[in-house]
Image (cartoon, rainbow, N blue to C red; front, side):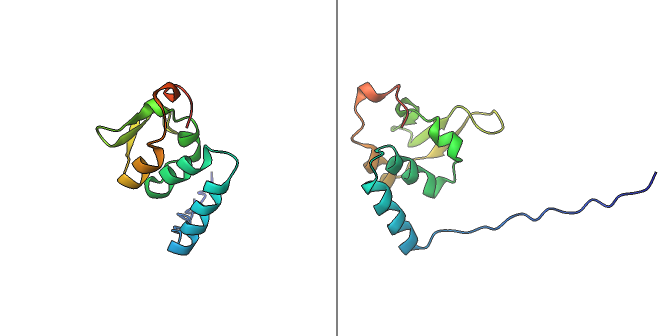
Amino acid sequence: MRRVKKFRESRGRVRFLSDIERGHLLKATKASRDNRLYPLVVLAIPTGARQGELIRLRWRDLDWERGAAVLEETKNGERRSIPITGWQHSCSESADASAASRRI
């Protein structure tokens, strides 16, 4: 049996939005007809949470006292939390208590 050399996969590109790009993105999501888009993007930018994790997030998963959002369903199946900063908190303050079971 021959030895087959395993090639290393590249680690991918790490890229962050510039301040201008971030401003354009936030402006566009705020203007969107989908009122869920802006809070999701506001959570995604600083936390790096995956799209699927954020889409499954419900208002009740946000723990304002601890300053964290609890992600129940993650890619590896383990529960984890992501920080909620003042910026994210202020964009989500308008959520009413009846929205607790609804997705963000």
